[in-house]
Length: 258
Image 1 (spheres, helix red, strand yellow):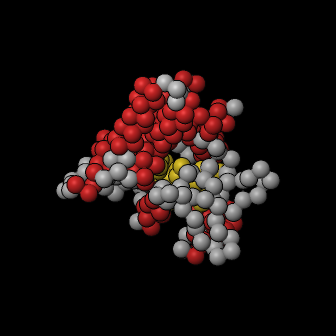
Image 2 (cartoon, helix red, strand yellow):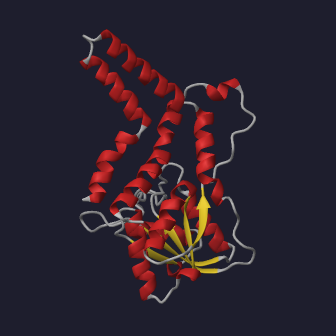
Image 3 (tube, one colour):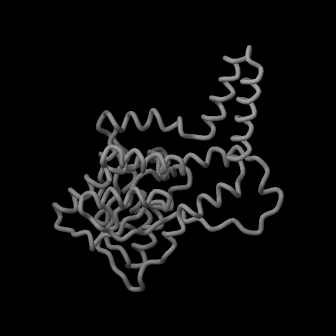
């Protein structure tokens, strides 16, 4: 129920939804000119503020800067836990991996750590590229074949195919790792930096204190020109990730997930 409710309501917390809602509201108050004017002004103000790319970059930087630290030198982890949300179903026709937005660095940075000898095995949890659908099928075989073509054998992967959210990423991954006798200090948690706070909290709620490795860490905006301040529809849409995390953390606290 919580999963369905979160998917249905999260669009209400997006700036584009606010702008759309305010503009629609002007139609219903068209007989009240002052209300209509202020609703329109509010919609334009939100549009200008949240389509400003430097403001987004600054918010992204403050959200992720605590996770800029590198891994300790010569540290070794028997297992990396890679949280899903970085891929779509594999393209079975041509065998290609299909990324979701710009989150594929969760997977490919973990592969880099594996190739460097820092990580031995990788547990992927809840990603669309390997998850079971309602019919019980998945593109996991295509995913593993793609990884073999990159030189990574099936023995390096554990696929958790049922998780639908961050809470389930934690509980289902821990169940697998406990069954294998793998302890928290043997694991590295890999996800996007903006998602890391909620992820660590979900694992901590299960008694797991785990080292983080964050991808998509943003830098402070620099060398700005007037062109950077021009309104951008893409910037307006990119706020979704940040607001999704803010809302997600609040919702998880309310329901006791962390």
